[in-house]
Amino acid sequence: MTDEVSGSVPDVPEEPPAPLERAPGAQPPEPAAAAPLGLVRTPTGHAGVDAHLERLADADHLAADGHVEVYEDVHRGLREALSALDAPPVPGPNENRS
Image 1 (cartoon, rainbow, N blue to C red):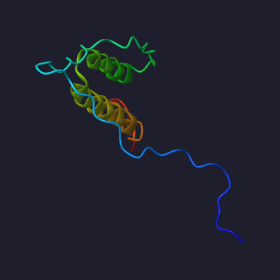
Image 2: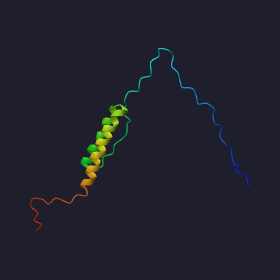
Image 3: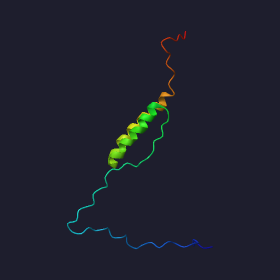
Image 4: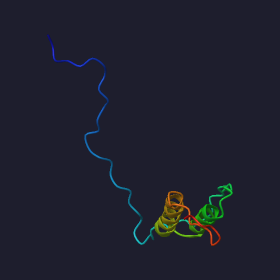
């Protein structure tokens, strides 16, 4: 019996590649400006949900670090809309449930 593994073993570099270096006095590249992704938001027919989904468009004009606040706000609103579906119906002013 042998302990050999069949198949080939990929070549592993002996040293990691050297980091990229900038010329002396060169400035780091500027991050790309925020740009809309052009995603189509299809209306759901539920006004509250549609309003939250439209809020996602706000992230199109923010840098990546600003997306978290928008996503968390939309997530919170959608979670509240979903939780409201589990709430018992509120009787109307003219309903007598005695």
